[in-house]
Length: 271
Image 1 (cartoon, helix red, strand yellow):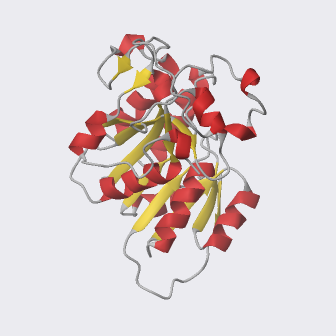
Image 2 (tube, one colour):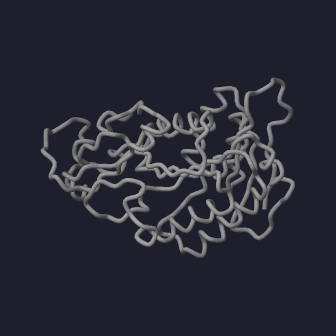
């Protein structure tokens, strides 16, 4: 199930040992930032080629398949000894619920007995497509997307200290709207407001949570400004007056409790 692609003996004393399970696009960005801050970073992903790429960055990297029945306890014990764990394993709304149950059940087995602090990335796609301002407690469990909420409950049951970050649509760096659309006419409902967050804010929030006493909470992570899809695509405001009712993700709980001020407040200006 797992194979070590480690970087070898570390020659300097590093601040923290941090694990990232599921080191995809966001996980790689997070790893780069943590390495720059002199942390020791341990990663897992499903491909040897990606593991080697992470090794070249400076990570201790492992190939781990959480859909496998073969848990490598030596690798698991390595992660269980770390100071902090970020779970960036893909939570898919489209995947069969049984597949997600198995995957995240294996994550719990992999981290069995872990008492350090943890973060799980999920998605604001957990909420219904209804036109209103949506906070973390707006809906009852049975109104949330069943697959995503099942994943959250599995992690809450096995690792109750986990802070769950429900991320709005990730943008920044090579993830920009013009990569997916060539003209406004290709965008459905171009005058609807967006719910996006810049990856640099997600990373900054994780780093701040690492230094906080907050445990076992759920937060929406979304930029405070909600321009229209058209405005984000064009990179400028068109002075559209929004209708009073739209689906807006409300991230004020995190801003007030952590507290946190977003680096990138308006998706129009995301780079």
